[in-house]
Length: 196
Image (cartoon, helix red, strand yellow):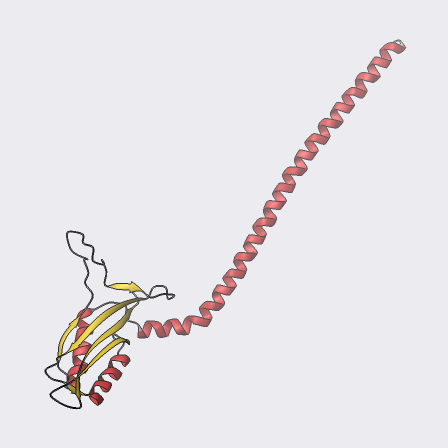
């Protein structure tokens, strides 16, 4: 073998070694990049899991803190809008105090109608800032022909406000009797709360 052939052989070997070194570097960098991406993904999943665990701990603390309030709300707020029972409760309270009522009415509703109208489709509306609780308005009119005393009217209001189906009086209209001094007739708007 002459020196020229050896020289070409050494150049070819050096070239192959250089190409293999470059290929090894490229393959190694790709492998490192894949492992780095995998590690970053695992790190992100770990952070997400930590955040979820922190939120879960906060939610559990809130559940523990408000569970008593939730139990009280379940006890106080009815689960249905049983209008017949509400009318019966109001009528019983009025009857116990010898108050004659002329009407008890609820908001109009198109539920159950075969044709759609522009009237609200439900009688209840959601209570602002209290998820899952709804309010329904009830209008109570007392018979103006049989007025009652102011003391009797106050007792009626107290009993309505302590009744779980008529928890809040939202509007009162009082009309003094012109024929019987010291007596009055009234109209009330009540709010009842429902948590289905």
